[in-house]
Length: 165
Image 1 (cartoon, rainbow, N blue to C red):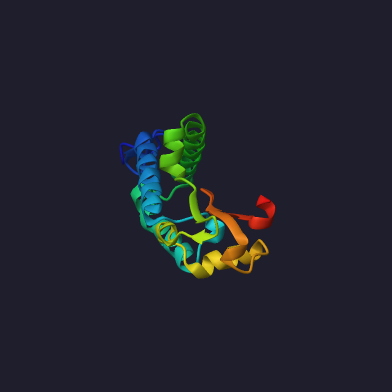
Image 2 (image 1 turned 45 degrees about the vertical axis):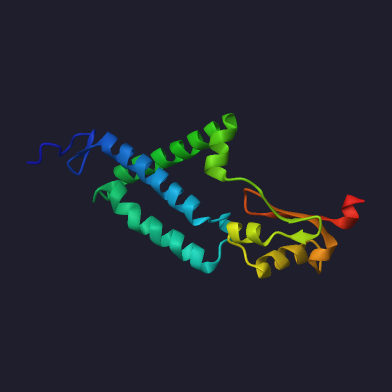
């Protein structure tokens, strides 16, 4: 008989804290990968970005559960991920430096009617995506825009020349 069988504190031969530690490590590694890849808000992801996110989640699944597909292990992992996410949210509200590290900074894409192409490239946006955001704000051209800012949540805020006056 397996020495860990029937023990509440072991899962598939591993201790419960292994699952928590694995979930925390994987959470931060995936967060780091997504920050390095420059991904924006999920609602603004392209189909390719979404496929990448789904494949990453599938790829890291076994590294978290160590082959244990039990309900108990799944609930422990899910609970750990939620607690870590809530904790990161709390810490980012308390520390501007951590918020900047996790969420990034807003990027000015257009300033004084001038398109900042280097900012567009840094943000990983195409001119087509920027123009779509401008059209959503009822601007047909860059000349109508005083300032356009890519916010940390992935939205583009547009201030027109009319609003400025």
